[in-house]
Length: 339
Image (tube, rainbow, N blue to C red; front, side):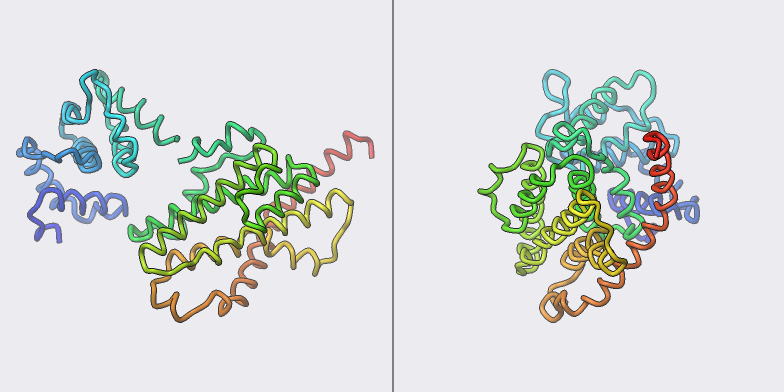
């Protein structure tokens, strides 16, 4: 494939994929010959305001030891020498630019400006939602959540799934913290009711940090549902409203804790299989990864037993992993209280 491709952009696309998969060493000679030829004709690398392609070309050439001037990014600067603010909406281009910055050298003034520009706008995937600013008590683990999705689906064709799954995991984490750490029981009951009703007009009854969380879920679900509807004509929003089930399970655990109630094993597992988050994760994976034929012929109900079993396994595995630390914490707290 490398030898058959004649267009430099296609060649660099494939080289980039091989490097990301970690198999480029099998094609070392071919890659070196292609990159040397591209470098000799580097003046032809005009990307017509394609920030993604320009940044990728710059990165790959520098990775292979070629001295490419950061002046290639001048076309993306305004009259004041700043990157055009309109570039901030190009998420793919911004990420490509940020990756290229790791190949900067001392004195690359344009890349210094690019670092500030890309870092500020990339952090906005997440900061504009306001979880960190409004909820210092909540875990902010967006990178961990993304890496977790990569372990499940690393192939290039699953890019949209990784985007959706990362947001699902991040939302689950921060909502879990509301129920476990911060929310008063009365507030949690109201929040659960609002999510269950799926009523945007009911958020005025919530504290600010809960308003933000409900709006984040609400907007996220509507965005994913719109993407699926636009892509294959299926309205899957009713499936994505399963967030209410997750919140109800968290509320049950909060009530048990506040009331000092110790559930039986069956009671615990019946609720914990939902609170582990697996059903909501699987639902989003199903609607995002399934093609239109599958969505036409198969319903989520057909997989209920499988989802149930998967959720129990995940819950027990999670409890086994954390039980030692939790026991040590309880013992430490008992020692402090003298009990």
